[in-house]
Structures are given as structure tokens and as C-alpha cells.
Amino acid sequence: MTYLELVNGVLTRLREPLAVTTAQREDPVINLAKDFVNDAKRHVEMAHRWNATRKQWVFSTSIGQANYILSSTSSGCIINRVMVDGNHLHQWDLKSILGNPQSGTPYRYAFDGTDDEGNLSIRFDNIPDGKYMVDVLGWRSLPDLKKDDDYLRIPSQPVLYYALALAARERGEVGGQTAAELFGMAQQYISDAIALDANHSPSEYMWVAV
Picture (cartoon, rainbow, N blue to C red):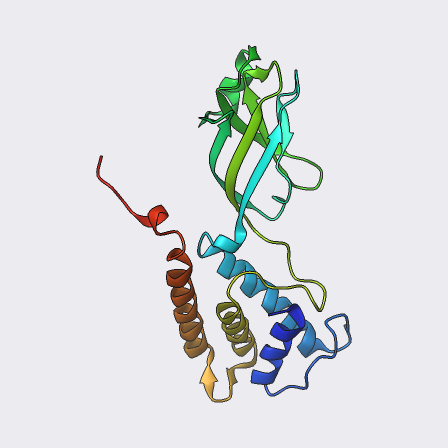
């Protein structure tokens, strides 16, 4: 669903007139619906490592450059694998990495802050002495929806009903349903969506004794 469709989905269930565009700012009810949709999106995103938010960063190192920016991470991210030329690297604390910098093949990494836009910075040790291929795998939070046709990439039903639950809490009830009832429905939609999404990568959710 698009941002406009989500906002109008909330407004329909509130028995309110539909929005022509999310760009309008004069209607307080529409403004609340817009905010609740993005609040709901962030909540649902954090509930699970969705396949839709999975991202792979692939880049090459440069001689003498220890720090590299992971793009599209300003809204938050989870990193679960870092490889250099096919070799897994272990994460260390930044203090250890900064203590005795040397040049060579990177064998460990640490995160050392962000750039001015909030994107995560990763630092390697050893400091690369040549061109190495870096492969980083993880999940990142998607930017807030802003334009009418901005598309929601995670499941829409949990977001729609969680936004509606937030609106019901503001209003008191919606069509005879209390906020508590709607939060319960939203949580069930989230659970169902997680189960379906996890089915696409079952091996990531298997625990094996070693």
C-alpha cells in the first residue's frame, strides 16, 4: 500500500473524509493519521527482521582508509555479518582497534559513530593495505513515508491496524471498538505477518545444539 492509501485506510475506519493528498496540512485529523501511520511503520519494523528491510552492502577498500560509511542506515540498522574477501570478521570494541593501528589485511572491525547524515561508520583493523572486497549483510529501518506514492515495503495490515489503534486511543473508540481491542487485533496481524515472513528464510530461525 502507498502512504496515501494507508492514511485513507485509517480515515475510512475513523468515519472521516478521505485525504486527496498527504501534502495537505490544514486538517488536524489527517495530520494525526499521517503521523500515526509512520509511528506504526516504525513499530512494526522493529518487531521483526523483515526480508523487505534486509540489505547487503558490497564495496572495496582503499589503501590506508580504515573507515567506511554504510549507506541507508540513518534510520537504524542491525548488522549480522561482515566479510572481507570471503573471510568472516569478528566485531571488537573500538578502543582495542584504535590502540595499535597497523596496515595489512583486515581481520576485525568495530563501529565508530556516524557521518553527518546519521549513517553508520565501520572501521577495519588492520587498516587496508590494498583493495579488498567487503560484504556486509544486515537489516536497516526504512525512511518515513512522506509522499503520496511512497510504498510501504513491510506488510500493510499490521501497520494499518496499529495506526488505527493509536488513533482510537486518541479518540476514545472507533466504531464501537476500543483502543485495547484494536491493539490486540494489530498484534495478531503482526504475529501472522512475522510467521509468513519467517517462512521465507526458515534456516535463520532454527536452533541447533553444538
